[in-house]
Image 1 (cartoon, helix red, strand yellow):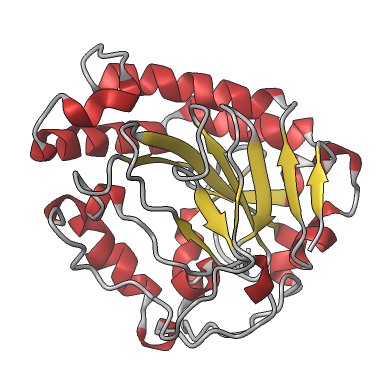
Image 2 (cartoon, rainbow, N blue to C red):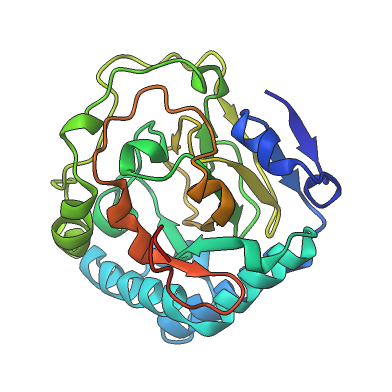
Length: 288
C-alpha cells in the first residue's frame, strides 16, 4: 500500500492506484472544506441553534439526541447544496463529472461510546464495504468535520486488502438492509439489533492505521479496504462526512478492486442510491 499526500488531483491514474489498495490524503482541496463548513451550519440548524457541537451528547437525553441526529442526517443527505459540493470535488481533482456516479452523501455522528454506539451512531466493526454489497469499483471518501485525534477517528487495516477474512456477508442481504433494517436505526439505542456483516475471526491490529486529520482534510480509498469505527471514549462527539464515487465505465466493464471474500448476492439493489455527478439524475442501472 502507498499513501499519497496532496496528489489525488495530480495523478491521472488515481483509480487504478485506489483499486490496488493505495490511499490518498488531501489537505488542500476547497470542496471538502466547503462540505465541512456546510455540515457545521447544518448541525447548528438541526440542534436548534446550538453551536457547541462536540458537547451535544452532554446536553440532552439520548432519545432526544437520536431524534435530532435523525433530522440532521435526512436534511444533509438530501439537500442540493451537498450534491453540488460533491460535483465540485470531482472537478477539483481534475476528473470529468460525466464519467462518475455518487452514492448519497452521509454525515456520521459518533458521541461517547457509553452514551450511544448503536442505531444512528452505530460503531462499525471492521468490515469491507463489499460485505455491505458495494461494487468493486467503489471509491470511498471520508473527512472529519472538526479536528480529531487517533482515538476518535476511523481505522483502516491495509494488511487485509488482499487477504480473505472469514465473515458473514454470504448470509446478508442488501435489499433487506435498504428496505427493512436501515429504517430501524432510531429504534436501536442500548444495543445494535440490526444484522450487519461482521468478521468471523479475530482481526490483527498490527497494521491498523488511524489518521488524525483536521477539518476538511479528506481520505480517498477503496471500499474494499478493511476499515471500521474507532470506539469514541473521548468527551467530544465526532462528526464526519463520507460519500462514494463510482466510475461508470469501470462499473459497466466490471473493473475495480479484487473481491477476496464477499458473498453478498444482491449488489445491484444498491444502484437505486446512485446519482450522476453531472446532473444529479438517478442512475438507471447497467442497462441504461
